[in-house]
Length: 438
Image 1 (cartoon, rainbow, N blue to C red):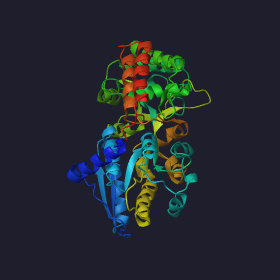
Image 2 (cartoon, rainbow, N blue to C red):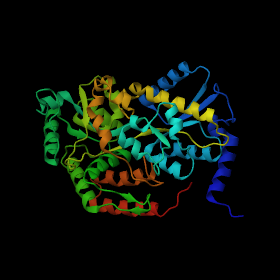
Image 3 (cartoon, one colour):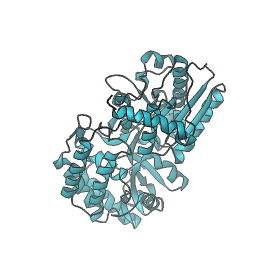
Image 4 (cartoon, rainbow, N blue to C red):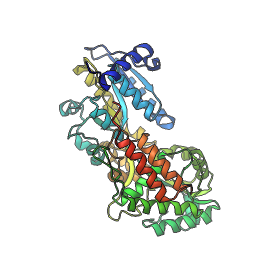
């Protein structure tokens, strides 16, 4: 009998889970046929402010459903999380509901690890496609079928110090930031902010950070219509001309001293929080950091330097999925969907942390429109550029590590755009010809 990779992984997963229970962190075998007052296991990867808000939302669910024993487990963000989720599912001991980035979810689907979310089941809980942001919903479909419910879009955005920008003459009469919709306008604004702050015009983390360099590159590269992978990651289609244009522009920001050329994630946060830079570029989740610092700031869309009438920005979405497991009955599915619907109904709590809600009943409400600065960049959800399909792609993946590492060397002045592109091509080709481990 031929031993397949899947069979080997399933056997290994079963043994690992049976002996260690994934650290005994709450992943337990689930008996089929449980009644409506049964239990739910929920896995997530949220830390910091997101983790606090998610726990608040889970407590609301518990209070509303005292008959359901909800066990929640938080695991390490990135590849470790998805490895454990895949192994748990292969070992027939997955959670009932789990968080998955939209860009990682499709690999779980192609590996047959997720339940299809049938329209009739969703409709029974008032969950229908027309109640979601179209971009996030459509991007999450696989062969026209839903396997995940997007609860947000989290785009790359621009933070700005309102005091510095006012001093630099970058605010209009209403106090809003003037448009920075060309490379020339953007560079001029960074020069003026640098003079006004006495430090830097803008700041983006570079050292020991692969995700952020990828995000700022992809935002600009996406505005040019550039693509990186095709055929579910089996072909590398990086456009050298467009990529070189973006990398050359980004390098000009650090080589001119408008941005620091060597700074890590926490250093970038501190530089902006201390008023030493007029602008900060990162995911919107850092909103809580600057609110806590009580500094004068606001947020808006990442500038549309190359897109013209077509806006694009790097983004991902957190989704909720139901992993496959043996003996999964209708009551179990409904309990899982009850939790998912509760998360959607608490979109305000989630949006307070900066994420753009995909649940239109809240996103289109006056209550959300009044939330500032969160609603300032809500349009980013419509222009979201998700990481390309591929088993090695998505948030926190090998793809982001490979691309982000090369881009970081350009920002740091350690490598030319041409050399960085050669590095990306070489390493992405290696990944593209490697079979999925699942």
